[in-house]
Image (cartoon, rainbow, N blue to C red; front, side, top):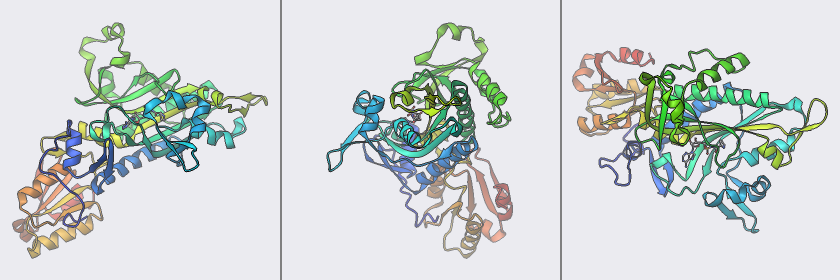
Length: 438
Ligand code: P5A
């Protein structure tokens, strides 16, 4: 993308309404704009990040054996009457009527709808287990939408739903998703910690929140430093091996970790003083195992091995896809702007042409822009160098390639790594090679 033609409305001033760094930076770097309270439009730069997060989430869900579907945002009220949640959900649910006066709602989550889809098609235990997910917009009329996309009213969620014949199967599905989640967050450069949680309106008796640390987090968290050493990717856990899943789950649940809601001072006091860690946390995912809550309420059975009807056991597993954009920024920014992890950056590099119109600068920039094959934002604007440096830092591309007239004449560029600030004078080929693009 050429910045002179791009729709990337950056702001010099800090917007008044933004209280936390990620919200300020998302507005200033031109990622999103608010259209109503807690509702945002995603602009080109922000949408590229959102899509990158979706891609990682999707790859890890598929790897774990979940199958992607796409359910609608609008749901019929009857389904929610069946489960008993239509009234329970209260004012957070956006209720609407169609032209025939039928009660509908904008889905805050999809347990009922997926259970209904399952009920229509699955008849035998032989078709189990199943895990279905989608990445779809949700609406929750939050009392206090705030912090930009972190607590929005309309937000993008990945939600998966598992169906198993028995409790042992449901436990394996739960653990498989926990592993997929830890891998997902790690690939985004985040250290997430699973913490036991309340189940709220989703229900059930087993649930973990995935919390990442950031000073602006909504809850106080307490955890054992052992979590800082866990590597869900290098650990070599296989989703399909029950022993691996058991070993992984043991590792995730044997050390102390709790939010203030579930904090147990007695157990906390037993943690070695040198290993106690405390801070604020942001919930980026939440998984639930609720057995037969929905299959019973909605009368769903499959024929079991002995021919008798069985209520399948379910779990549901959520990731806050749009919230993650803010959460990653909270975890990775500095005084000059965003510092994107390579895996989700909107562009791999910014190419800064310090003298547009200079034949050598233009030619070299065009050459680099072509070599980066859609993965670069080319700052070809006729602005001063200072403004270009500031915008590139603000937008946070992992690499900056600075092309000035002196270097261009001599066949060199300046390559800067955004995360460390490290700069080097190299040939264009060497710059591409270092970026893993040569
Ligand atoms: C799990 C999947 C559920 O809804 N049903 C389907 C279960 N869980 S949850 O914890 O309520 O939400 C899952 C994740 O969605 C994100 N999230 C939000 N993101 C932005 N704005 C909001 N208002 C919001 N509410 C929830 C969180 O990351 C949460 O972990």
